[in-house]
Length: 194
Image (cartoon, rainbow, N blue to C red):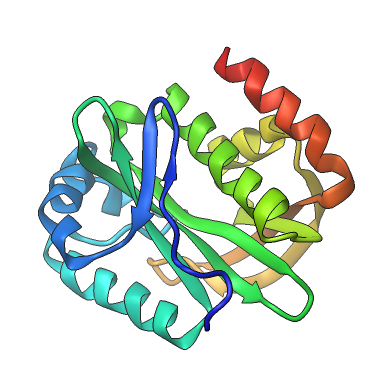
């Protein structure tokens, strides 16, 4: 059995459910809100490539390296984005939360905070992770600030780590939360939601 196994995580504002082809139409509508694919410092699928992106993530899930979720806004019961457990290391109980994007309308709302709380709580409390990692482009200042607000600490920068969609070189900033830090991070996220 793949680790971590598929699971649905529910909160007051958001439900994270295993990504499936049935989420396609909602995700196409979501990615059009703000034309997210035009962002140069992150990778968001074009509307016409959403089916291929869902298939890619599901293939990685089948291979055991990713657990992709559709982010469902509880108020509308519609998918408003994607997030994943990725770079899964079952032996050492580590994973990364990443490949996350949300439609513009729900960005900077309680939805993202609760999404991270659900993912982190499941990772540390159920999966017994020793560390959870976050990575983002050094140019993505908004993402970096959001990760830092979670309570994650910067582990370093991987220089010329990858390429952006436009072909320019990407420096990747690596953050993590380790198991011993999780109780304080949980309190911080719960306070942000309250």
